[in-house]
Image (cartoon, rainbow, N blue to C red; front, side, top):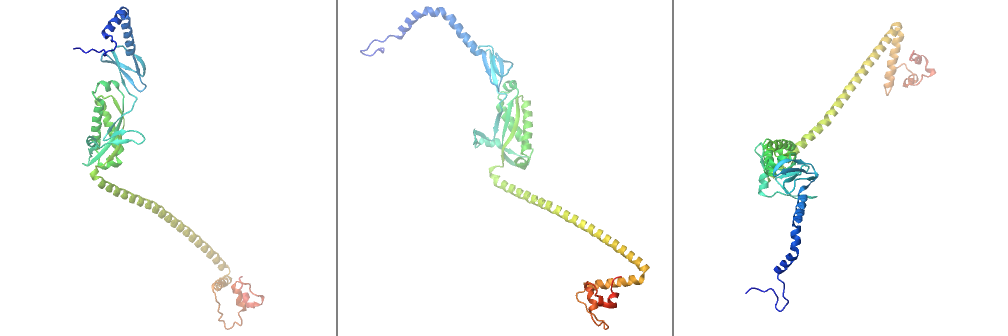
Amino acid sequence: MAWDPRPLGGPERPDPRDVARSVWKHLGPRIRGRLPLLVLGVLVALGALTAYAQVEPDEVGVILRLGRFIGTVEPGPHLRLPFGIDRINKVPVQRQLKAEFGFRTTRAGVQTVYGGDKPELAREALMLTGDLNVAVVEWIVQYKIKEPYQYLFKVKNVESMLRDISEASMRAVVGDHSVNEVLTTGRQRVASESKVLLQGLADRYETGVEIQQVVLQDVNPPDPVKPSFNEVNQAIQEKERAINEAYAELNREIPRARGEAEEALRAAEGYAIERVNRAKGEADRFVRIHEEYRRSPDVTRRRMYLDAVADALQRAKQKVVVDESQKGVTPMLWMDGGKAPATAGATAKTQEHP
């Protein structure tokens, strides 16, 4: 027995098929008369929608006509053949893209959160150096798309290819350097050499990308040897500090020694000049005394004697007179530098300077 949708005891509901037949009976002739116009309007609307394309400012449009490359278009609005005959693939050539190795950024912002605990990331960052040591190298490759045609059609998966050649180039460069260079002083050189090698591989495989920068994000020794490596670094830093302190002391002592030597030389030169001038003065004095002695020997001899006695008595602190014929010491008092008294008599006159 078929189910009757009409409620028990309620009004009878109309059959939907009867309603559809009634509507088609009244509207069918009108629709059949305007059907071509309706189809044409739909086609025109679809054509208008599929013929318009907008390329953003940081993009370049690659036109494919029935799947074949025919050219590129610059940013802005463009018209194309509708209904999928022309397709425009938009390639962000002005946008800087990046690939991370050994870690992944899980949340970017003021406090960026990185994730790198997965085993595949650890294997990606673990590398062998040139002196057969192991280093954990995390780096970033920043690149742009410079050839949209090569980027779309020469390589099936450019991102995967770029990751492979980036890892290969970094391992090759790290393998040519020692662990100390990779961890400390040679990081910038490693990044520069890796960038050059990576760009060469990208051009060889026609990836269509331009490598902007290779940045070593973090380089560390493996966790099991980190304490020993830190002790070695501390010892190296202490050694460098001792060397720098020694150089500082050297830079202080050498100028001071040079100054003292220069001072001694100048003092010696001054003393030599003084001695020479004094000797010249004494020689000149002797010559003049000799000339005076030749003209008047007695007077000059007496004068020299009196000058010597006066000089000796002036330097003497105490004076003792032992002359038995001397009745008093008054005539001797003027030897202290005073003027001889008028009553000194003939003794005083004989001791006056001529």
